[in-house]
Image 1 (spheres, helix red, strand yellow):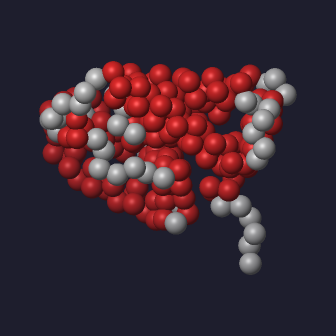
Image 2 (image 1 turned 90 degrees about the horizontal axis):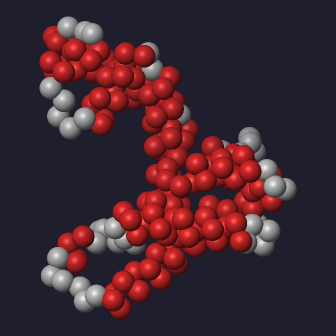
Image 3 (image 1 turned 90 degrees about the vertical axis):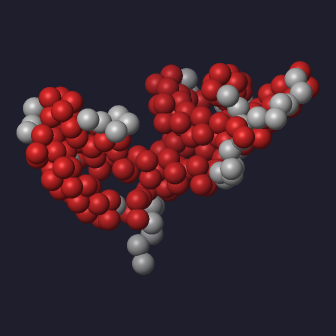
Length: 195
């Protein structure tokens, strides 16, 4: 049986190694941790019902706490869980302070997320997102550009897409279909996507 680490295990090992380097004063290692894990922390803070500004403050506080406790994290391989737990606790503290300051209105419960993701679910979600965009990056350039437009522009008009990509309007739909088929094949072969 193959005992090689999975994509998740490799990521944990890489982050643990970066934490060790950060403890040794290597700023670029800390920068890499921040760049990679800020999206996970953002989802964690927002899942606690915080508005974007409060979530940003919570994430900044989490990074400051990490700096203060950089040398006290006993298990570097558990960095993700440590940061998620710290973010969640800080979000709870901020939410409790806000509740003391103002009474909730009728619309408060409409803004709350339906469910709260666990650290493992956040990690899986982040890894799947990375796998998706890695697959998009490996597609031919035109496919990648077209799929980015489809992903980020709400209901793009074919005239605009044709002009932006320099392709005939009649070929956009078929090209999009072929690009999605290529993307599905790539994702089906990726263990971080299909596991």
